[in-house]
Amino acid sequence: MAFSFNNIPIGNTFKAKRANFGVGSFIFLLLFGIIFIGVSWLFVADDFRSSKWPSIDGTVTNVTRSTDSDGDVSYRPTVSYTIDGNTYTTARSYSSSQSYSVGTPQAVRYNPDNPSDAVIGTHGSGFFVYLFPLVGLGIIILAIVLFIRNIRRTGQINSLKQTGVKLQGIVTGIGSNGSTNNGTAQIIVSATGPDGQVHHYKSDAINGLNIMGIADYQTKPVAIDVYINPTNPELYYVDLDDIPDITPERITELLSNVASQNNPIATPPTVKNVPPMPQPPANPTFLQK
Image 1 (cartoon, one colour):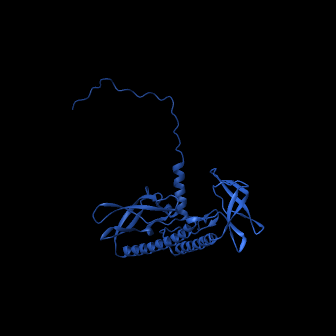
Image 2 (cartoon, one colour):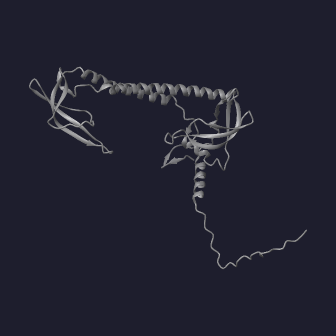
Image 3 (cartoon, helix red, strand yellow):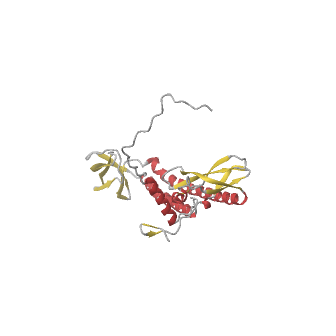
């Protein structure tokens, strides 16, 4: 039987998997960074080019005023200017907190080869516009770092499963992976280590939906294997393959358990006219052995 959500089939089971940064995620983030750099570089090149243009005084002919949801007001001016007897107009492509008044003078920079191409102001956008390519570069570096880290962790896991010491523990906790909004979770497994002491091992991040398979771990113990490095016990892996799959039957069972827990317990009927219990004497006499 296939499981469906809103009549959309989504498979027979959900298999718990480590939330890793695979090839698909790497390519997506890498392309995003490259596109971000390309688009932002167009703005940088345009700003650098216009910073060399001559300037002329124009007149503000219109001001578009807008208010955001926080009540902050921003302004976008339109300026007219005259070159060689021809009048042109240009509007700022973005709004800012700087206010303008219609009829006041305002400097513009214009393209001497095409006077209709102009920008408002005598200076470029400043250092701020040059930060956007750096952000794109940071995204690319982040993608590379996360991908390399994932490759190294995958290699560690394979090595631990082949040469590590295998411990058997039970799930003793479920928690979010640092943030409740990233869709991942972690399980805590308690197991007796080689030193004879009970240790708590935190798993790699897994998808939050897959954690449903052990949602009732407190009433139904779930055995999970842990592989540790014998020379470095701080290096370990909680085997996510031991997490039970999410099947339609399992989901039905979990929903039934929740429903039974939320079902209010019936209040027993009140018994009336019950004779009072006899009271013990004030000075009881105890028998001697």
